Structures are given as C-alpha cells and as structure tokens.
Length: 239
Ligand SMILES: Cc1cc2nc3c(=O)[nH]c(=O)nc-3n(C[C@H](O)[C@H](O)[C@H](O)COP(=O)(O)OP(=O)(O)OC[C@H]3O[C@@H](n4cnc5c(N)ncnc54)[C@H](O)[C@@H]3O)c2cc1C
Image 1 (spheres, rainbow, N blue to C red):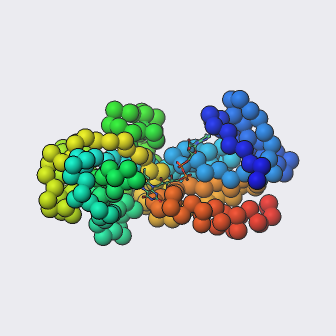
Image 2 (cartoon, rainbow, N blue to C red):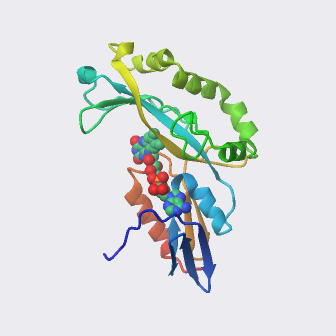
C-alpha cells in the first residue's frame, strides 16, 4: 500500500506544529498529518515527547526461559499452561513447543534493571532509579513482595525453577533443563498508585496517538488492536 519501513531511525522528538506532526530522528525530519506511537518499552518516554501524562510509567519485567534437552522434547506435545491467577498480569512458567520442535520452559517475571535489561548484568541506574522513585513503588512492593522474592529466587537458583516446572510435567528431571535461553522484556504499564494495568492506555495529544502497555497477548491480538486504534482514534477529527 505504499508504506515504508525505516529501520535504525530512533525517534528523538515528536512535535505538533500547525496542525501537523514533525517526527525527528538523528537522520531524518519528516512531517505527517497523524502519528500513532507504539514504542513498547520506551512508550512512556515517547509519550513525554508530546507532553502526555507521565502515568502510566513503563516498568520493565524480564521473562526468562530454560531450554528442554532435545531428547526430552517428546515430553511436551503441545502447550502446557498453568491456570492464570487474575491477581497478576503474567501467566507463570509454562511449556511451549516451538516451530523447530524445541521446547521452552518459561517465562518467569522478574523486574529488569534496565528497560532493555535482558540479563541481570544489564543495569541502567537511570531506569532503576526512576522506577524506585515512582509514587506507586512502595505500594507495589508491599502488595507483591512475596511473589517478587519467589520469582527472583527461582531466576537465580535452578532447583527452584525446576520445582515450579515439574508441577506440570512430573517426569521432568533437573538435567533436562539444559541452559537458559534468550529472554524478553515486557513493557508493563504501572500507575501512580502502584497498580499494574491489565489493559492498554491510549493518549491522544492533538494529532498524535500514543499507545502504552501492550501486555500479553498483544502480539497475538495486534491486528485487532490496530483496528481499535483506527476506529476510535484515527477516524476521530483532531481536537
Ligand atoms: C517473555 C515474553 C513473552 C511474551 N509472550 C507473549 C505471548 O505469548 N503472546 C503475546 O501475544 N504476546 C506475548 N508477549 C508480549 C508481546 O511481545 C508484546 O505485547 C508485543 O511485542 C508488544 O508490541 P508493540 O509493538 O507494542 O511493542 P514492541 O514489540 O516492544 O515494539 C516497539 C518497537 O518500538 C521501537 N522503539 C522504541 N522506542 C523507539 C524510538 N524512540 N524510536 C524508534 N523506535 C522505537 C522498539 O525498538 C521496538 O521495535 C510476550 C512478551 C515477553 C517479553
């Protein structure tokens, strides 16, 4: 449809000017009629470019996985999921058989120490400090500290992870979990009162629509989310 995908263009500024929007990157400067920003882990940063409310903030939660030994992959023939606990936005460790027949065991949910903190060693003092001083930090810690200790300890101590996984596959042996594999970081929207949002937060600032919080299953439902944005925001006249 004549669209263009530009990789390697970090948006450093978005400005509404004379009824249009200027999008600035270190290598380009373009003007558009309307802009929809879906910046994942950076979505609150991008929201601030256009003067939107700083809340919800994005709290990065890493999801780590262990890999099941290939010779034990036949233990898992489909997806094995826990029953969701509605108090938490994350599902808990589950077994997923991939398209190459490899089996992932995870993800957990541990606070990442940087927005793009894919391991415990990737630390951003700025991101961590901003999370600690967020007004909802004390309330979140008070509410969920038990869950936090449980998740962090099983991230660091393999037998604890194994114990969680074996609840679903009793035949599992510790040595079947061979190594930790690539992790992902979830962009969890977090309100001022410490609440973890279950749904999307959409701000409309003039001609700019900013989407924050794309929790699972946002990838699965991305087309429906796009339709929702077009119907409810893009079709509305700019105010
Ligand atoms: C461990 C894990 C497991 C998950 N499991 C599932 C699942 O089973 N099912 C499911 O549906 N979803 C799942 N999700 C969630 C899913 O991955 C996200 O909801 C989805 O990726 C969100 O899409 P998005 O486009 O909003 O954000 P993203 O995929 O994060 O994309 C945002 C993009 O914006 C770019 N960006 C950010 N800032 C800038 C900037 N300043 N300039 C230019 N570009 C910028 C980033 O580089 C990135 O490419 C999982 C996530 C994790 C971490």
